[in-house]
Image (cartoon, rainbow, N blue to C red; front, side, top):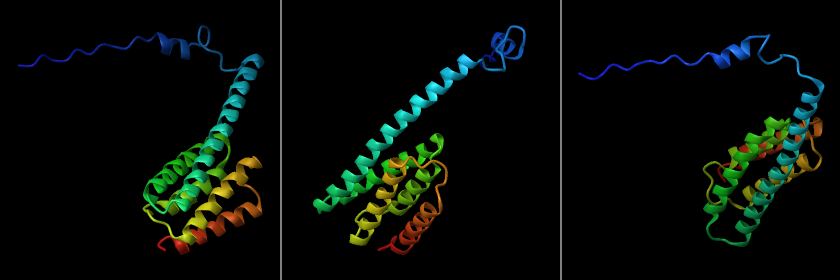
Length: 164
């Protein structure tokens, strides 16, 4: 007969420190702690901008190489899908929901697409351009009326030309 498992209770030290107001962590952050946290967030935002810029370069390079080389479009389309998905996931974390929306529209459009036609390539390029504009102008939030109109126009174009 197999041996019965023995359950060992977890140490309560961490829980006691977190809950005990006398010896635990303060719930109110001191000004110097807040300043350090703000610096960390600012540095992360700078890193985010650099990382998105690199990903946008990858997207643009994939489209340009696909146009120049009539072979292996599937490889470039996989790269566009992967990179647009990365950008989509990053935007909301750093207060760029518009970036997320444009990247989602691009990613949805290229899903299952292996050999885009000329119009589809133009739409992909326009979506990448929109991502560049959001980052170049550091448009946080949902943008203004112009950005929303552009997003809607790209959505309509992707719906109309998704299947060729």
